[in-house]
Image 1 (tube, rainbow, N blue to C red):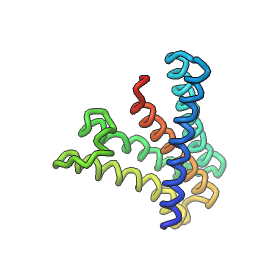
Image 2: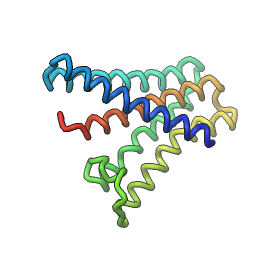
Image 3: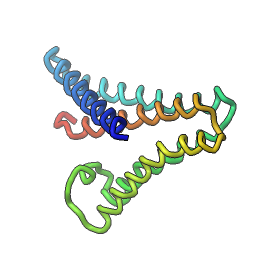
Image 4: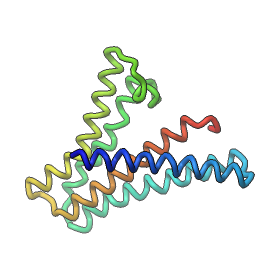
Length: 159
């Protein structure tokens, strides 16, 4: 479990470094802010599309549509931010508390853990193949990287 958390932390660090390096490189080359915004949005759209494609492929390759159950969690993950956080992800990184803020943090975390747990539980129940589970987990990892890149881009002042 510790190695998995270390892997996620390291991948988030690398992702943050790559995003910052890309934006810095675009500024050095004299690209306008519009070009930077469009290139970042195009990259995010590509990552999101790849995640959804893997989600569908995990179902179609093994001719079993049970893994699509985790797509429900993809819809539920941003809902606490929309309802309790005012549509912003800023409150997730703050230490501010309160009833609704803490509830939103809890629901976001529970939804994220559910996205990982559903394919593992389905594999344990012998409802899906190991390959489908691995494809689902890669799809979730790409989806989370997309969300983190979007969050980092929103923190940037160029938007």
